[in-house]
Image 1 (cartoon, rainbow, N blue to C red):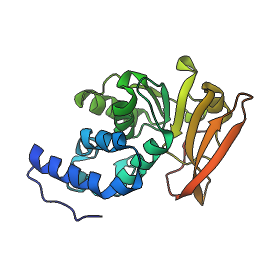
Image 2 (cartoon, rainbow, N blue to C red):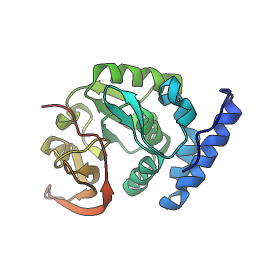
Image 3 (tube, one colour):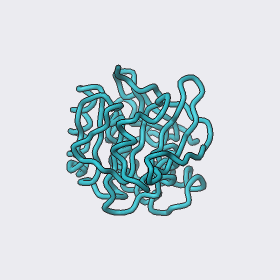
Length: 219
């Protein structure tokens, strides 16, 4: 982790800090395309203005409404584990500020990202940020993430940016056979769980370490 940087808000300052961030997380991923995605997305545009000096530190930051933007290394690890390919349709549960969706958009194409956000205000803010940063083709709807987004199913992959006690049945059903799911699973202690959907609808799971995320909201 590196210190908070002093910036006059110039693009050069942010680019330098972003490159430093990428080098910090590089040893946690295998796919160089993930690093290029992190390098491309201006994380400072997705955090509140008073936190932009911290935008490229490898840590989560508050974004309002009791929610956070995940630490860059966690975004990188999740993208790396999911092994996205261009053109895959991806369901994201928990839009938050839109940063994670933008990174995913760099890997699959913005028009292939469908994101569900529980909070209406966060969803609207994310739409605005994504449009301003040229990821406006990401689709966002307000709703309970447990229900997924059936209109655009089947998905090649689905991931959660919030902790869930288990993979919700509706989301599992919306992922194609052979597709992947990734989520922080648990309530108190959470584990990052990757699952591949078998042809019979069951999941083959693997665990990828302890994590700490905000809990999924909804009924």
